[in-house]
Length: 260
Image 1: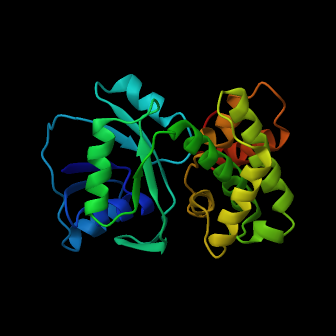
Image 2 (image 1 turned 90 degrees about the vertical axis):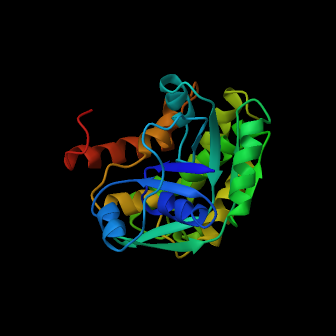
Image 3 (image 1 turned 45 degrees about the vertical axis):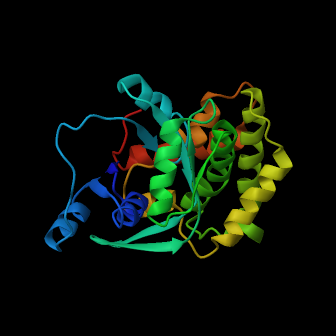
């Protein structure tokens, strides 16, 4: 199978590199990372002008599938990924933790999902073709809402949210997200969601969240698709997510990374 990984940063390069053991993979990313990959002999494969038979989004946050579907005339699969990845230096990506990829359409199973899932499994990736993607996406959103912005603003590793001063902020953000999920027809239990967030923080204790990596590197973050998504889809007050969103956006404006 042919894959194009659009957005080959740390996680995209990790997934693409693992897939390349069994499949043809093209990485599309930014310099200097892509330049270093090219200069060190890794070959980018795939044909120009290929026909898209399907797209899988493994980005953090929500709303990505809808954006892709509005612009592409092909099926779009949603996905979550719990592998950990860190861009050590241009051309070098470290897997900081094994995990699972869950993928599938919003409305249950599909032949495309089964095909892509089998391709991932053939490459040695732990993949599940899910029939409950909305629940999985909201659960992942809640975990990201609790961990990412909190660690980015506090400049602490994930483990600091287990019992450190910022733990209540992370838990409140995850809890708010679960309530918003319920408003949007997805039955997430708030306290179970908080427990999942703490478990992920503990399991990835030494890791630096992707949003903190973006802040460290002076890049625009995914806050709009995470805490901002919660804020935009809430019909109840979500003060913690609102505060986290506005603080990260304020930093981005100060760095000339956004104008609004």
